[in-house]
Amino acid sequence: MTVTELLDALWRDYVATTPQAERIHQLLAERGEVVRNDHVALRTYALPGIGIEALARPFEALGWVMQSDQYRFADKKLDARYWQHPDETLPKVFISELCVHELSPAATRIIEGLVRQLPAGFGARTDLPWAGRPWRVRRAEYESLLVDSEYAAWVAAFGFRVNHFTVSVNALTTFPDLESLDAFLVDHGFTLNEAGGVIKGTPAARLEQSSTRADSIPVEFSDATMRIPSCYYEFARRYPLSDGSLFHGFVPASADKIFESTDVKR
Ligand code: NI
Image 1: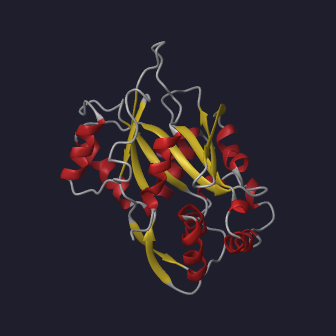
Image 2 (image 1 turned 90 degrees about the horizontal axis):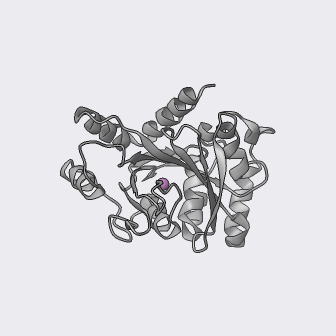
């Protein structure tokens, strides 16, 4: 597998559940933009064999390098890190994992029941980042997980796949800033995630991000089909550090609100 094949496989799987991303990509292309991705983000459960390290392996095999920063999202019970490729035109890979044993005993039991269904060697698949949902899950289990953690419920429903691609605003040539891109998206009928304000982060934090609200798509549970939020599209503008190099890390306070782009609307 080449880097291009890996990124194509991730993109194809992602747009199948996130039709809005393909429409936005198309709109940008029609303006003459060549879209470059800042990062792709993946989610998993922090359990043996399927945690962050397992999801990272197929990327590491193609040259992505783990960076030293470690992020903790205490409220959401998540840990995260990111990987960078020596070719800086390639997206960073941001992987988070849910500390399952910090959830309620009921939620932990449901997740352990899902993971018990995994075939031997599942976590070692080279296509793990787009392997999809490998377990049967009932609607009541999804709804019960939602009470504890939107993230837990999302992984139960969608399994292993990209949660979002992120357009690099720095690489766009017809938008001077994130505000103008956001205005363009709203003009074209897209809904942005307003949790914590449309734009998360500031130039002083070296990173500004916004995102759409996730599309809702029909998902088949083992006993029912239900429309639930799938994935969203994100937009990031990075600023230089005092030494002039571009900031490549993440800002936990902003990412915390971005995670809510897949929340079920209540
Ligand atoms: Ni992101």
